[in-house]
Each structure stands twice: as structure tokens, then as C-alpha cells.
Image (cartoon, rainbow, N blue to C red; front, side):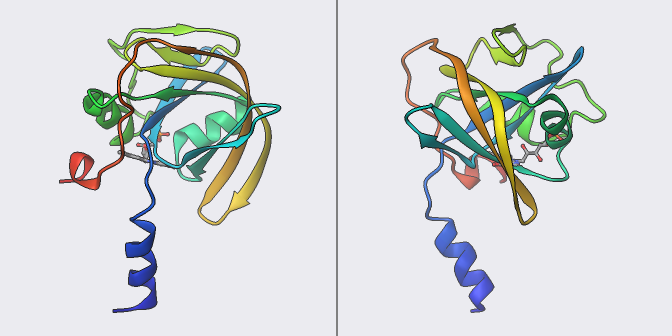
Length: 157
Ligand SMILES: Cc1cc2nc3c(=O)[nH]c(=O)nc-3n(C[C@H](O)[C@H](O)[C@H](O)COP(=O)(O)O)c2cc1C
């Protein structure tokens, strides 16, 4: 086994939740599913998200400086697939999807379990991804349910 393969296998044991990262640039809204999301600070409340440089969401978050983290529930796998398996460059992933907007204008999905509306405070180059750090401007819990835990089989079989 190569070290590259070994690294990939070991990294596969890191536990992630599944989130939808949404944003708005002018009148355009878009979102993508992300597992590489984390907390970085209590005060101020900071959230990190690693976004691949090829994603349309990457261009939009760079341009707008805002994003919302929509926390998916264990019953939201279809939502994770909707936003994670195709790009918003050519399709409107929000067609027929109900959402609200709060402080930043980024879409807040009505069927997520919790949300955090964030303003980008810095971003850091991280290989083929960029690590965006956002300060949480507003947040809410919409329903009590277990968070969807990332499992490759649920999305890529
Ligand atoms: C479960 C799941 C987790 C994902 N996690 C990430 C992630 O953390 N970072 C990322 O850049 N892409 C991630 N992706 C891939 C993007 O969601 C996918 O490339 C999406 O089509 C990008 O959409 P966009 O071009 O509209 O931004 C994930 C996809 C799935 C299905």
C-alpha cells in the first residue's frame, strides 16, 4: 500500500457532519454540500469551511464575503445530494427549495435543523481548497434531530 493510500484511509476515520454552505452575490443564490466544516473560536464565534477552488460556491463566497452554514439532519440525505452532486454554474439548485434569509442574505434552508449566518473575516490558501473563516452574525435551531454524520456510502454508491 502506498503512503498516499494509507493517508487517505486514515483521514477517512475523521468524523464529519454534513452541511449546506449557502451564499448570495447580488440577486444570485447558490449552495453546496460540505463536510469539512468546523468551529474555531468561542469569542468571537468563528466557523471554518474548506471550499474547493473549482466550486462555483468558492467564486461566490470570495465575491460576496458571506455564507450560511445549514446543518443537515439524519433525514436530510436527499438535500445533501441535491446540493453536493451537481454545480450551480449551470443549474438552479434552489428551484423548488424553501428558504428564508437573515442578516447576510444567504439562504437558510427551512428543512435544515440549525443554521449560522456568517461574514467572512479571513481566508487561507489550503492546497486545492481554501479555508474560509466566518464570524457568526446570527443563528438558530429549527428542530431537534440528530445531525447527519458523513458516510461515503450514503452519497457515492
Ligand atoms: C457529502 C458531501 C460532502 C462534501 N464536502 C465538501 C467540502 O467539504 N468541501 C468542498 O469543497 N466540496 C465538498 N463537496 C462537494 C461539493 O458539494 C460539490 O462539488 C458541489 O457540486 C459544488 O457545487 P457548486 O459548484 O455549485 O459550488 C461535498 C459533497 C458531498 C456530497
